[in-house]
Length: 400
Ligand SMILES: Cc1cc2nc3c(=O)[nH]c(=O)nc-3n(C[C@H](O)[C@H](O)[C@H](O)COP(=O)(O)OP(=O)(O)OC[C@H]3O[C@@H](n4cnc5c(N)ncnc54)[C@H](O)[C@@H]3O)c2cc1C
Image (tube, rainbow, N blue to C red; front, side, top):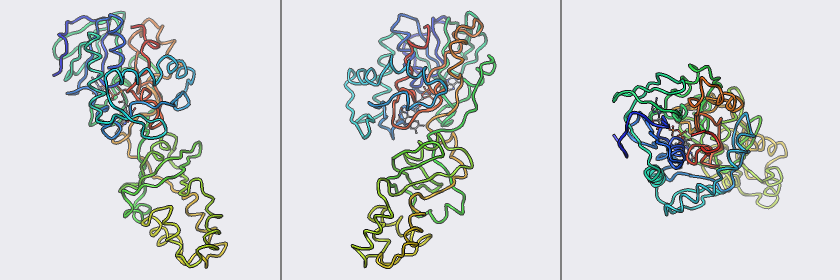
C-alpha cells in the first residue's frame, strides 16, 4: 500500500482512480488548498502510464488540437485545450528535468522511461499535499450533498467526489466499468462503448496467407469509410496493427473494409509503367520489394499477382497489380477488444450533458469524471492529455 500522507476520514475532494487523469486532477485540487485523497484498488498508481508509449510514454504532442479528439461536443474540447495546452504539460516535464525527444509528427516521448512521468506526478501530488492510497476497493454509499464511501478501512466522507477510474481497456491493469456503472445508477446517460486504438483481427482464411509477415511494418495510407491516416501498418499473428490501424480502428465499424494504400504518395500505375520502360528485365517482385519489403512483395506475388519481368507486363496486368496494392482492401472480422485497446470509445458522460448534470443538485460533484471516461476518443500520438497523461484541465472542469 502506498500512503503519502496519513488519511483522515473527511476530505474536501476524494478522487477514485490513481491513473493519469486522477493524479492530474488531484494536483490541481491540492494546489488550490483542498484536502485531497486519491483512492485506487490497484496495487500501484499509474499502471497504464508505465506501459504507455512502449515504456517511454508519448506524453504529449506539440501540434495536437481539438480536431484530434473524437467528441460529440467539439466546443468542450476547444475550451478545455485552450486552458491547458501541450506546453503547460511540457513545462512540468522540463521543470522535473525529464529528458525527452520528438519521435515524429510532434510526438514527445521520454528519453528514458515512463516511470519518470509517474514519479513526476507523484512528486507534484506530494507537494500539493495530496494523499494517495492504493489497494483500496471502494463502494459509493451516498452521492448527495456530502458523499459517503465505504473502504475496507472504514467510511470516508467528502464534498466533491471525482470518478477518474478510466475506461475499460486493459482489464489486466485494473480497468473496470466502475465509472460507467455509477453513471447508470445516477441516471447519467452512458454512450455505447467499444475498444479504440486497437489492433484488428482477420478471419483464419485471410490470415493464413499473411502469417509469415507477422512483425513486418510498412508505410501506408489507411482509410476507413470516413477518414484516412498516413502512418505505418504492422502485420501481426492475429491481423493488423501499427499506428495507422490503431487510428483507423477508432472509426472502423464492423462489416467495413479497410483500404490500405501500400504505396503512399506514389502513383503506382505510372511507377510500373516507368519501370516497364526502364527496368524491363527486372522481376516484378524485385520492383515491388523496393517499396513493400522483400517478404511482402514475394507473398503478394505468390498469392495475388503473377511475377514476371516488368517489361512483360500488359496494361491489364498493371491494372490488376494496382488493384491489389493501391489500395489493398481487407475486411477485418473484428478488433482485439479491450484486452489490448489503448482507449475506450464512447463516453461515460456525453459532454453535452455535463454542464446540466454538473448543476443538478442530486448529482453535483459526483459526476466529475475525468479523461478517458469523458473524452470519446483520441488520436494515437496526439495530445497525451486527451488520453489521460496531461488530463483535461481540471480547473476548467470542476469546482474543486
Ligand atoms: C498499451 C498502451 C499504450 C498507451 N500509450 C499511450 C501513450 O503513449 N500516450 C498517451 O497519451 N496515452 C497512451 N495510452 C493511453 C493512456 O494510457 C490512457 O488513456 C490513460 O492512461 C488513461 O488515464 P486515466 O487516468 O483516464 O485511466 P487509467 O489509467 O485507466 O486509470 C484509472 C485508474 O482507476 C483505477 N480503478 C479502476 N476501477 C477502480 C475501482 N473500481 N476502484 C478504484 N480504482 C479503480 C485503476 O486501477 C486505474 O489506476 C496507452 C494505453 C495503452 C493501454
